[in-house]
Image (tube, rainbow, N blue to C red; front, side, top):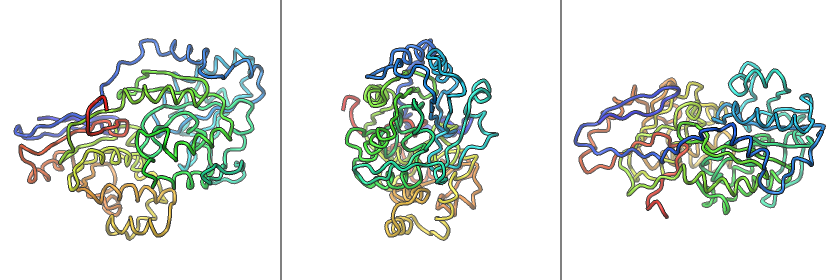
Length: 422
C-alpha cells in the first residue's frame, strides 16, 4: 500500500506490504467557501456581539495584530475587506499600524514581510514586529486572577481601536487558538508568556478544551485587560482554504467559532495504534521543530504505550529556538529532560524539550526532516534517511494484527478514541 504525507511545500511517499491494513486518519475536508471575499465582507460589516463600527468613526489610531509566518492565516483574503471598512469610517492610512504578533519568537525582519503581507499593504501602512524582550516597547497592566503579569505592546494597547486577525484551530495546551490570543500572547512580554504557559501542567490545559482550560481563560483575561475590541478569524480546511469567517466581539467570535472548528478538526478512531506516521501538515506547520512538535502531541492521544511514531516534518529553519537548543546540550535521555525541567521550573524554549520528552518517553520515535542528523540526535530525536527506510526499520515488529495509522495533518486534527457523536 502506498501512503503520501505533506512535507514542507511538497509530499513524500512510502509503501507498506500488502498484508498491512493502514488507516488514513483525516478529518473530513469540508469544502471551501465559494465566495470567500463576500463572506469576509459580510462578517466584517455585520459583526457579532455588541461591537459597533460607529463607535470608531475617524479613529485616530488603529492597531491590527497579525500572526507571524508560522501560522497559515489567509491575510491576503482577510485584510483588504477589513482595510476597506476602516477607510469607509474615515480612518486615514497613517492612523493604521500592523503589529506582527511573534510571541516569544524572534522579531520578523524587513525582508521577511513579503511572506506575511502583500506589497499593496506593507508598502502602504506602518508595519512593526513585536519583541517580547524589549522593555521599551512594553507596558505593565497588572496581573490576572491566576497571577500572570499582563505585560503587552505599549503602542498596540494605546491604539484607539484594537483589532486581532487570525485562525481558530486546535491548540495542544490552550485548547484552541484564535480570538484575543493573537494579541494576548503574540504581543506579550516574555514574562507574561512564561507565566501563562507554565499553567500547562494542569490536566485541563489540553487539546480541544476551552471553557475549563486555565491557560485559555488566562488568555481571555489578558485580552480583556488589553482591551481588544474586534476579532477577525477564519476557520480553514486541511487544504488551508477558508470554510468559515467570523468577526466582531472576540469572546462571541470564539464561542461561535469553536463548535465550527470541532466539526472540521475532530476525528474519531476505533482504538489506539501500534504505529503512526504523522505530518504536521506541511508548510508552515513544519517550518521548524518548535512548530512541528505539536503534531507529536496530537498523535500521542491515539498511540499505544511503547508504540512507534514516525514524525515527518521538513523543518527547513531547524529547531526555531536557540533557547531550546542550548538547554538540550548534554541531555542523554527523555527521563533526564523531564527531571531537569521539573527541578528548574517552566521557561519558554526549554518547554519544548519538556513537551517532546513527555510524549517521546512513552513511545519509540523516528524523525525525518531536513535537519542535520547530528543536531537531531543531540535533541534525542533518532533520524531516518527517508520515510521508506523508516517504515522498513520498524517492519520487524509489524504483523497483520498491528494497527497502523497515517495522520496527515496532525497539527490541525483532534484525534480521539470513541464515536463521532461523543
